[in-house]
Length: 353
Image (tube, rainbow, N blue to C red; front, side):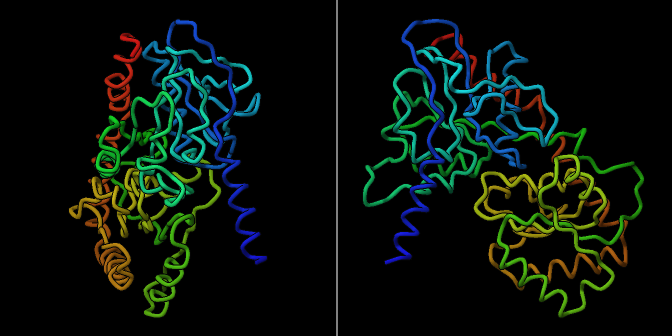
């Protein structure tokens, strides 16, 4: 009984946090402004970084846009930005405006007031039904009862396919992620060999990661190697750690895209591990080692093989890692994102519908 009360209280608190910030509305026609809702959290988060990047790209195109936070004077500081930021209490949205809401707010989408056109920025399609009760919801939830919904945006081919299958009546558009070459890059050309460091982020599959490291240590694979967990770092600190590591372990799981392994590839790490479904679009076995999901023994063998290969012939593994860097930095570009956004938003801004 007590556990049930605790769970109910925790769930209620989570649902409160997932309510879209309040804002004013009006019915006057006028020029379009695009508002991207973002959480008031100043810890590294790929989704929030993407939101700021979208807003910058739209303003550069001449499309008025702003990040909509809940608190006045809040902006993210863990990456450098001069992005236009507003808060809900200071704006009023009309029928020509566009409100872009991350999928994280799914349980509160039905509370969005009548007024703006609504786009859901679904960066993690496999979280779409999180906190949405099957027994108490209508078919097509959480989007069925979202007033003003006109489209979904997502960031990978895998997630676009999933969303189109799940919501056949809602248009789905793809906008690529961006890997900033000024931050994530492999370092000087001609780099011969990096320190024997194995980097990984800590926010996915912690129990499975511990099991893997136990297995590797038991087999002696980690002798002479330094483990580099990446947590709570700024964007540039993360890139520096990746650039100073030979290997990166990917623990991706049902991802919207999988930024950490892509950023590690861009930084010249040789990546081993799980693509996390969405990452299959850039986990090319010609320049990294993808591992089938939950194949812990296969993961351990792949890491051991990479460590042995790097010890015996670092140049070959380094060349493969550099090929990965070139592939990622060539496709996931700011210009490419700008084109994606132009194709999606220009008809909405010029046509008003």
